[in-house]
Image (tube, rainbow, N blue to C red; front, side, top):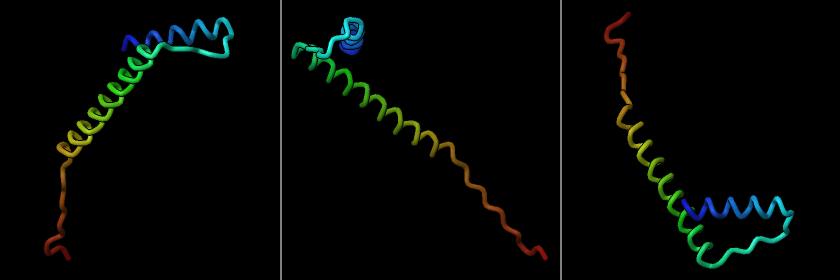
Length: 69
């Protein structure tokens, strides 16, 4: 997450200087891409696990009237 923090810091500096461009070295860009990919992967895994847990917690109830008249 270090590269995301660096990107946010660079954006803050660029905004304060009202810069129109922001240039990242390729190493920082790759690191930013890797951090974002890791975050998305973790989010997907959490989502899948939550769905599985929700399915495990599901209870099926069946009500029958029997010979009720």
